[in-house]
Length: 270
Image (tube, rainbow, N blue to C red; front, side, top):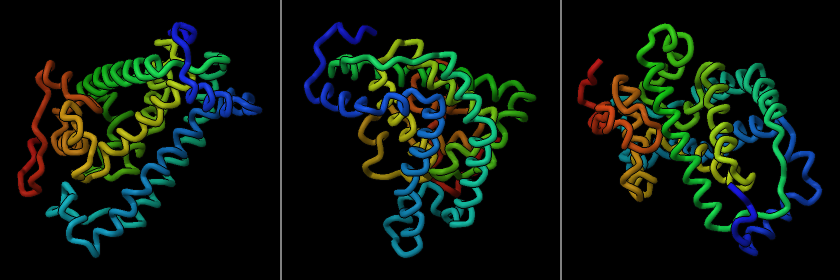
């Protein structure tokens, strides 16, 4: 989208000039996207680590857990083991491969910030496009046994996922999803600031999907067209349903939607 099609908002222009000032070499580093993806994922998981800790002493927090009656929250050791697996895969595969993709992509930093409307449209378009691509990727990977076993099965080690486990997947899966998100912004020609907001929102929604909590202020309660943690946790229990990451329209259209399984006593369909 053309960054000059509308006048940039003064606040966004000031923010963009502050970000660009003396930082172009860092912002254009091919290692930045993967490094930021890992860092933001860990930071966004921190509130849910605190909730898991509070759950041992607070009944209200325990009542928000989707698997409250069937399984205790993950232990600190489980969090640490999960983090070590993710870090190893990023360092050995995701970081160098995504850096190569960025060099081929050759991003540029325009002088003008996007307008507020352009920012909104580009971020929304990226989220919708990623949701579509992910649904198709996820749908077919579950239906091709050798692909499922070699790429996606590692992620399904968590029948009751927790926030950090959103990226506890094979190196091939982590890399493919990072490249998928980068490609969405590239295909749409997004302004770099729009791309940053999209990646932040994408990371948050992924963490929230896997958090294991049905919180009163969760995104899916504020916006009913989102599936949220109950929708995705049902997928981890019943693998033949709920393939879309965020919205539910593709699952409805493909007949793969299943209402969330919130009662831990309900026996899942295999």
